[in-house]
Amino acid sequence: MANTLPKNSDTPIASPDMDSNESTENLHVPIIGFWQQKWVQEFLPIGISLAFHAALLIVGLVFAKQVVELITPTQEQLVIPDASLADGEVGGVPNPGINNDPTRQAMQNTDASVQESNDWANKRSDSLTAAASDSAATSTGAAIGTGFAAAGGASSGLKGGGDGGGKMAKFGPPGGGGGGLTKGLGLGTGGNATAILYLCDFSGSMMGSRSALLIRELRDVVSRLSAKQNFNVVFFKEADSKTFDALDDSKLLPAIAPNKSKLYSFLDDMRPAGQTQPLEGIERAFKMNPRPQIMYILSDGFEAIENPQAVKELIDRLNKDKKTRINTIMFRNAETDWNLPQIKSLDAMMEQIAKEHGGTYKRVSAD
Image 1 (cartoon, rainbow, N blue to C red):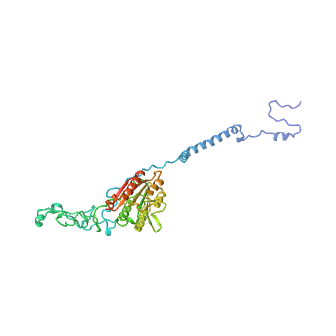
Image 2 (cartoon, rainbow, N blue to C red):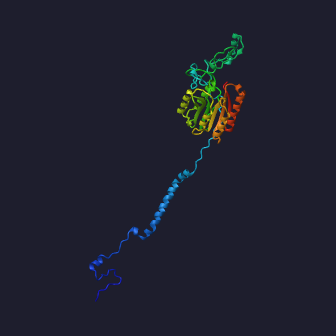
Image 3 (tube, helix red, strand yellow):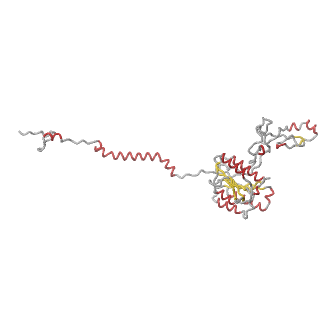
């Protein structure tokens, strides 16, 4: 009987050409790896795509704020400069020190109880009651009068020279004297403006008291500027083939201690000279970086210019956008100067410049 296998038997049937041993060793079922699994090959690409796009979305959300800031235009902070001129008793020195040094206060070494004062005197003044006592009046036989205090102090005394007293200065090393504050020229600190320029006449006509007052006020006003502010000082005149001198020829300087000291040295070296030639100084002032928000223009007149109206025409052209507010100050020796026909014309022009450029105008007489 021939050998037969059941139908459902898993035993391989040997080929007639095969050796019986080879038929059982070489025939096997192939092994399928993880990456070859059907579900892996179908879902892996989708999973990778989802993970990649999710990562992009997260990165986009993280940097969205920075991207918006980069593409959003920035708006410059609104600054409203104070175009008012300084007024009242400013710019002077309450107690000029030794040799009238405006940086030092006058003090006395007599009465340590005095801590505050705006005057200086040799000694305390007797009270009016004591000066007007019966004994004093009887001894002199004179009426009560107001005397002149020595060294600037106020005094009360009998008719005649007074007792040389008054309000005493603060206790400390003695200084000069000089009494109260001097009226200011009008130069101010520009309020909240951060770019301020002082354009001042320093021609020969400013010699004497006018230049001394101007130098003193420039020192005072710059000393009060804050470190957030930038400033420059430009003097216009015609001397040594130049028509202007500037603390810095191209830019405004931060109002920090080294630059303030630089200004003080600059002022010490300046001398008024030559004719009044403001045009190049005006052009340079408007080319400063940053451009001034507030400009103070001080002059004693433009008589030397063939066409004084050219000053206004130049300012109108350089400041046609009105971004710089301009304060003007007309400085003369005496009150009677304002009645001179030529001064009246210049006076009106300076007032018009201030009015048309958002500033303030002021008259100042040295006397």
